[in-house]
Image (cartoon, rainbow, N blue to C red):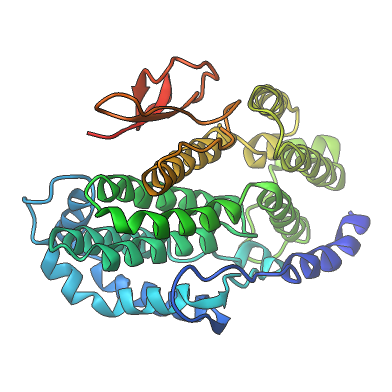
Length: 374
């Protein structure tokens, strides 16, 4: 335990020393931290708390039931939040402060307000596009994509997953918008999507940050820090508190370090290794490891989001240049296309890793992920 405690300050400092600068997608770049503005936006969105019908209005509107709810009034009411979102997206540094040294008292952003804000941006973009104001609609969606990036960059797992959810929500609306956008918009969309793709955050730092956060929280537990979750007394009495916590920290460090090193590998290797790690977590004799160790098909979620991003990028490039590009498919090979028929299609192999020649859907986990122009 002493070694773990001694190593921790340097690792926390390394996390916070990482370069948070990222491209600004539109307009003039402004020096400063985006989260100074995002936190103001989230504070405004907290005004939606306790108003479940209004949240249903936003979420249903952004899911396609546009005529059923008065979303336009909500977009107007919370316009200040969208202004702060835009201001944050213009800042040059997207890194949210990450004081992992707070241990059990470390908190991510207000996740409910994060969801409110993403839905609000999608609603505004849809309304603008409906009025023929496509560039303004695109600007709003790309501000929201920048926010999704900044949620996902150099953070812990839960916050990264909320970032992926926001990516997915915005990409869904962008797909619908591109089917209606005028031809002159596609070159700019392709340019911006290339930047979004190049800066898309993988799980490399997320896993190591998460392991560090667990390490600090477990150290708090071991020290008997106030408000910490108690160590299970029965097994602690048998194997010793020091051994129980030290073993959990070492195991979770190992598991999440292996997951971090898995980034960039082939989908077949990544899927196999993720499943093996999950089985080892479940089989651990240590109840702390079983409870706090990594779980779930997180790599699948990340690659599915990236695949949809690349489908949109390929479509925008084709509409801009007339040539379908060769972009890497996160599930193997390259993004495929058939642009010869009346309904051009672009597709990713999807989670099963098999090329079904474009048989599938945009929102699927079983066959190809397909973008098809209506």
